[in-house]
Length: 297
Length: 251
Image 1 (cartoon, rainbow over the protein chains, first blue to last red):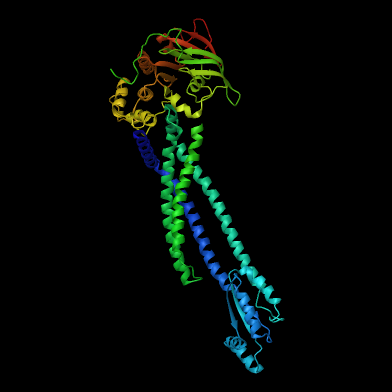
Image 2: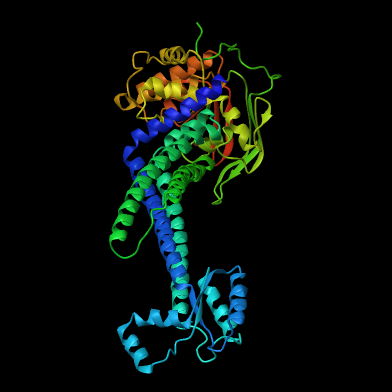
């Protein structure tokens, strides 16, 4: 017990001493790790925010107007409406009569004038559909086209081109986000390993002496691993604070301008906790790898 | 006096005794093809004081490195206190190394630690929680004559004093075998002689000493066992030898 406590105390004190004595290298390591943690954290928050905005845009875009034939009976329309409502992919369905369509269209002065010139209402009644996923619209469009009560000339307001483009943008952003994250993670691992290796190299004599006098491998490793964990923790705290501040500023700035980006509290808390755990884990793992070469030498 | 070196009989070893160190047909070839040792056989007994002599590159350092298992032999067997170390598992190496006290030509001191901290370091990393650490450190520094330099940093000491600190560090855990690889390599003749006197004193207390050197004056003055290595082979092993045999140009 006394030995374990003394070993732990030695490792902790050595880690602190090493960190202080090699402050330049230690701070360079903390700064590098902090920068990478900031990039990863910032990247994740940015992707999350873009995802949230896109999701709301997707919901806005996930509308389909199914135009009904003028001679469709109310019973057939009700039947079709209930069939659509029972579909799990559908969020809501609302019926818009010919008159409601005309009232809606009349808000545009040009159309209002055209309608009064015509004297009759050429606008069809419609079922306004809101679906969960943008990608489902194509199937509903096809289904509408094959339904007898739907207008044969213009079955829906489905615009394959716009929806296809929006889908493509979402896919591209998702892929770019994933690729950037992978590249950042790879770069971070290489930089952290080399930073820690430099720190370990600065203390190779100490490691050599420890080996010579008969210290066990784990006894040699622990101070370095604790030091790596300390560096990772500090880096994560600084990076987390900067990410948090930047996120708040971004949300405020975005609300006044382009799009409404909601501040996601639970996601931020989870992300900051993950950054802390990640920083400590990467620090420990990097030190383990960094010191391994000198132990096996 | 209770000192860091274990009190043991300084009587010369008997033939029937099991050697504390033995090499049996040991060869070492490095990956680049250099043959550092070739078919070495030797036995060193408890309480021996041996010089290991030879020119630079003769194989002296390789022999020392094999003993502490910093290197593994390419062939042959090495025993330390009856235990074969040639194929010893890595996890057992710390225990093996604690049997030795080791000093090198370049001292290997931690410049940012004081003399006392350098010496204490060896105990802290091998016996964490050691009681009376300060007393043990002071005691061993008294043996090497540096009791008034406890809080001095290595850079403030002379070469001879730094080597004494290294010796104190190697002694503080009371090793049974003391290995010195060119301990006087960087020192002037007077200082070298002081270091050798210290090693003799350590040996007198019962610790086996193996000193690799090419310091001719020291070897010839002390008149102890000399194992001469040349081209990786043991070419001479004499109980009271000189650096070079009269009329021989071996080394």
